[in-house]
Length: 299
Image 1 (cartoon, rainbow, N blue to C red):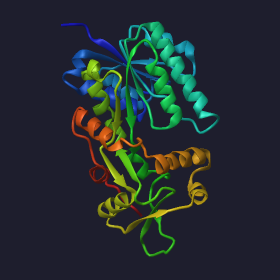
Image 2: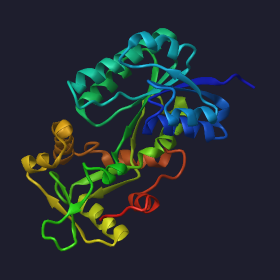
Image 3: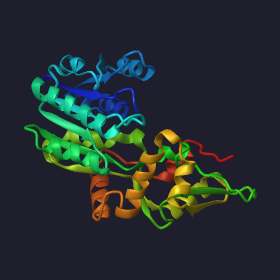
Image 4: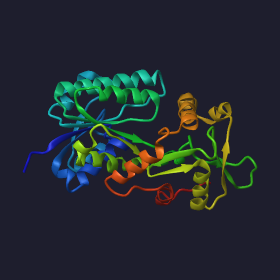
């Protein structure tokens, strides 16, 4: 049997990284091909300890401290990483610096393949384009809007000001705007496809979404799941920003405005999402099934 290739997973304590690591460790074929090296700023995090119990090796490294990267990437064949969005300071500069530090260290270490978690945001696309220019094979996981956001302040419906027991799903986009959605805990199903056939997917981007829904359709699904009346409401930009937490207000508004004005994945979204879904390693979960699985409630 050929020796296993080392797969380094940055952000292994987070949603995306932990999903990739767990998926590979549990997959009968991938677990025979790859040894998982889970990398995080803290190896004592409960999710890291859980990965260790499943067979991953743990390494502490910090993308903001380049001196920690050479040891973390020594002997690595394939690298999965994502940059860390911050709501303090210039996140564009920080994420670009992180990406360049990791990729430069990967090149120095002789890494053969890079999988980057990209986004539709222009500055993330610039990072992706830069990675494509490097002398190393690469592929890209571009996740859709997280279904998990419906459980958080940024998208969770709120009680209607009418006081009639109904709820409002409000946003600066229009009710007919089509938005792709992903259960981000299923990241491994998409990245696992790349790991299973790296040559096939070299240079490809996975527009990773389980389905594309209008915001009106999202409100209808939430209504069915919760038994509450939920309506979508379009808000003027400044009013929408006023409902967002101050630290992330401008970034969230910019993201939704881009979706509204240009589309999440651009003009080929339908074709790109259909291709990615067809090539995922396993069935992916739609929004209604996701909400029911998590016993989603509005109170």
